Length: 261
Ligand code: NAD
Image (tube, rainbow, N blue to C red):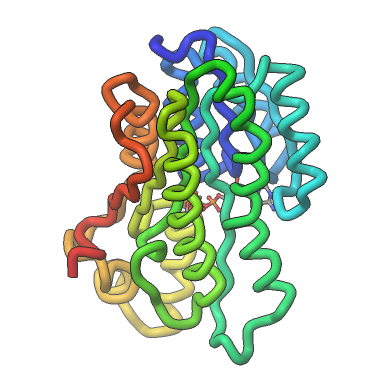
């Protein structure tokens, strides 16, 4: 339980990668601030489960991270209820797929606000207390799309390249302060979101389940295996260890070889 007494805020932690990070950090004793959307009863069940696993406290905020004022309230709540944020996992993200000349303007604004600007706001608000304590961890969920592009995902690719740059800049500013700042760049991760696309794609393209997984979803991923949420969470946990204190400003790929091509 090496995170006992520390508090982790994980944005977008009501499902997928963020939820796995919450469970993994809680299992090492961290207090957890959950954030994201979903069914209130299910979220309360998750909050209780995480709180029990940590032996500390767990809170939940439905703050909409596309709104800077909601982020300010979230950070204030984390300080009031859980004593501040020692570990910040900027994970909430969204996607929309369309060619650039047909991309809805409001979707561009939302994707950039959530996938990039939200991390600017949480980081600027969390850093003063981290620096004062002489310890902190900022872990940004980027993507293989922080390093390479795919068509029809312009704002996602731009925001993910942006968060990789933000990671480097903040790492340099905090290098002597005991705070490390890194991003994890997964390839395709097996989440309900991905799983649910398979039946429709099978019908739309007259393909088998195997063909959809290997030739459509995993076309760019040489291992032909999805990354798991637990693998991403295990790397996030490692970055919290003292052994990882020399890793800062890094963009850590976990993509089955995608960006090695
Ligand atoms: P997910 O859809 O399972 O989870 C997204 C989370 O963000 C949910 O908790 C959701 O409620 C929350 N969220 C959405 N909009 C929000 C908002 N406006 N304010 C606050 N919370 C909001 O997705 P995931 O696959 O777990 O993705 C998590 C992160 O990982 C994202 O940044 C995504 O870009 C990145 N990523 C995912 C994959 C993948 O294949 N799944 C690959 C690379 C990177």
